[in-house]
Image (cartoon, rainbow, N blue to C red):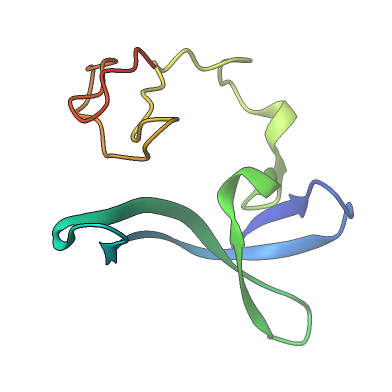
Length: 114
């Protein structure tokens, strides 16, 4: 069977094919010090692959969809928790965008408490 998801914004339904995780990093020379003190950026993107009735595959951010049914059973009829309390950790500093280690809220680059 299949996992059916709904695109939250448009209420369209699609078949969930799989998930993906993309991480990226970029570096460019700074204005004053060039390559001695480069400007660094990094981040990640959590996506899922979905398919429409015609079989067209699209990638969409995972937070933009919700599961409607699995193997023909509506998600509301399954014996699962209403809310999942998983601790969410920021993965990058909100000021300088440097990656944070899991569980660490103070940025080692700029000192900001995130």
